[in-house]
Length: 182
Image (cartoon, rainbow, N blue to C red):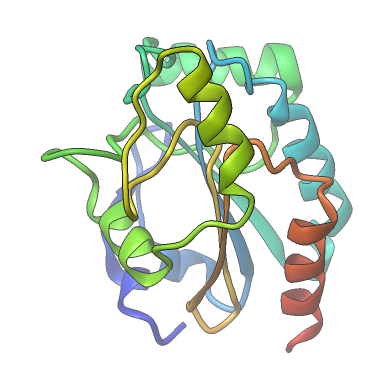
């Protein structure tokens, strides 16, 4: 990986240190997740995608965040137990971080700067607005389950709105192309 995001310090859900350099040469799908969100069932699709393409070089990296209406209130241990019990998650789960605001994790500052526009944004923003929920503007993360695709060289090549699911043809096309690009 040649992109500077590879060196940003991260913490795995078990407390061990990590960086994206640990996944050098892999295609990464980075997702901010929450266990009490209307989109939480996306864990199932993310796990299916991971199991299908892990051998091809795909890593799904989940970053729990409590930025949106307190939808990820649990501790790292509670989050891990929820993911295992309810969705049999086997992809890497990281320690809870902030993806917005003054305490936004440096990884999410770098991701949103590298890819400020998301595909499929309109419907999700409209649904949130209809529910009276104010959303971030500009490059900030819109909601839980926003997705970033990082290629094997460490470049952020795509970003998808939270309601773009793991089986969406737009996301799959980007991932398939990145996986074929060795």
